[in-house]
Length: 81
Image 1 (spheres, rainbow, N blue to C red):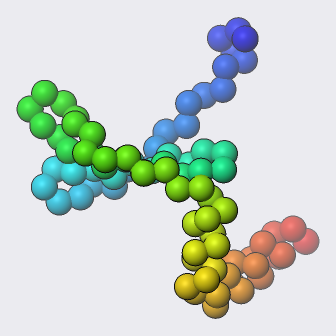
Image 2 (image 1 turned 45 degrees about the vertical axis):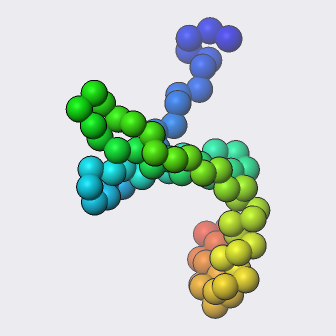
């Protein structure tokens, strides 16, 4: 694969937390990866990493809050029209 054909690496969504921590969210194909890091003197140290299958996350969201999906479905239907 040439340089021009290589897909651009997607940047994570980052959220600054308390105590110099950072939550990085990577959204990939079929999974969401969450990485918690802390800024130290020598750069960033990874505290923990979580990989959540997208299907599982959607199932749990739907199980806990079915009402929120009705609004999302309406928006998607209007976009598709």
